[in-house]
Image (tube, rainbow, N blue to C red; front, side, top):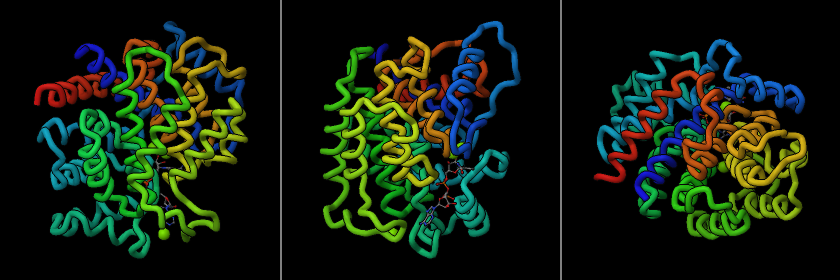
Length: 346
Ligand code: 8NA
Ligand code: MG
Ligand code: MG
Ligand code: MG
């Protein structure tokens, strides 16, 4: 029982790292060639293939800080987490951070964190960031709070609001954390009932998103909510859809949380079954390869999908040759072990 959960924690953080490292070279490509991607993964799986390690980006840099802070304090501590984000950014600024979020790090540094919440509230003329930067780093929260949904929702919201205060940025992180929780609570390696998995997320998001928020939003003409996106996700599942263009048309592939978190969850769920253009029996590989095939924000979508696949399947399901091609895979694994320790023995 405990061993299974520890294996899931390790799979989750290593899975998140792998999606980031392997997806980053394709970031912003509008269309990723299926043959190129198949060959890329075939090479990574070959134990004799040698190449420089793929570097992780902002997704992993921030995930590490979240995990380290939870391990250190055994609870969410806003100032400590903000300090870790800031230190990490100024030590290693060239990891491909979002354009606006670095403004938060600078304000924290310049004001000595006088009010740790204020810089995020000032983003985008007071509207707050709706980017996927809160969701992309949330898996340690989903793991740490997996036994308590109320604590999970609250902690995911708090962790998000350090940098992202737009409701779509915050709710995207909550959705991803809830999905991580469902993966951890699900029996090991049992096949997932993808319809009840998504139905359960819709149910939980209806408690998170107040009804009047289904209204028009200033970023588009259409009603925007995660419940609506998850309804589209269910329609795709019913059609067993695997065409990347159709998935992107329905769910998106951008840096906005609304157009990337449901897409990542879809990749995880659909890739539980075979996909014709992905030749592998390894479900973990199929999930991240499918996620990268969407193009756009490939590192982040693959990282979120990889975190879910790892939390479902456990570390055992990840090919060690692929792991070795990714920077800091030992660090991700050791953080997962420490995080499982503080979570299971509080
Ligand atoms: P962020 O808060 O700077 O937001 C990212 C982007 O989202 C912004 O630059 C805006 O274009 C857009 N955005 C967010 N909120 C609003 C709003 N209220 N109104 C209008 N536009 C908005 O950073 P973040 O931490 O959310 O970003 C995470 C993403 O950036 C990840 O994909 C990460 O890997 C990185 N990244 C992405 C790309 C890419 O284009 N795929 C490139 C480099 C870095
Ligand atoms: Mg990135
Ligand atoms: Mg708005
Ligand atoms: Mg990205």
